[in-house]
Image (cartoon, rainbow, N blue to C red; front, side):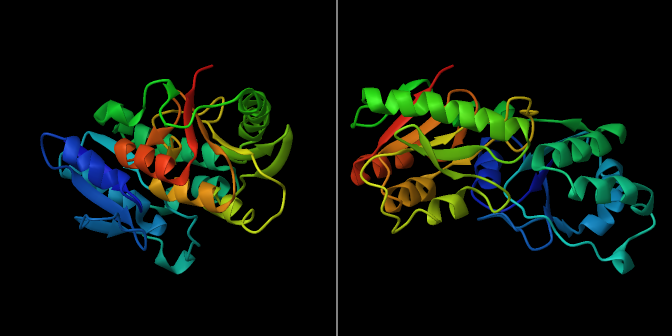
Length: 262
């Protein structure tokens, strides 16, 4: 039996629609998935009890999907099953996202639960390589893409973020803890001249079973408001929510969408 550890956004709902049987849905309190009613909500302070309850219900695999923010921990809310995990949880909250999520994976794995990737359930979320938009890329975009890939790899190695914006070889914005949306919002009404590209890729050593980067129509709209020329995502490393809608939004905004191979 599969349990979906769900966060915000459309991804959990899409995965449920791909499954032949309904999974158990557990969401972190305050981060309900779009269009789904969780079977249960949990707090980080009750993670141990969640794992015990999942196993007693016959769950053998879990899939993590959807966005969450780092919650504050209330020591008074800790339950008995979670207390032994507190040192690891507190250490994880001080790490970068990738390192923190590796800790989460290890906690579930040590309890005997397998980790299933979202792309195992819905491999079509990873689009084929190529330019998918009506607008095509130019040489300057290829040059900026090479620079952006170098920057994103460095960010990933430092466990900081998964995206950046590059214009004429220069970094305009880098993703950090506030996330992609915040990064793009900082560029609105910034006069840097026409052009520039948004680039997103998984971190070089990232465990692809959890937190694979995602874009959707809202990402396209933010890129357009930032005044950029288009979006570049790593082939096989970035999921696209509702690809047809994303391509349509890209075309409507006069942007390009390039799924770039290595």
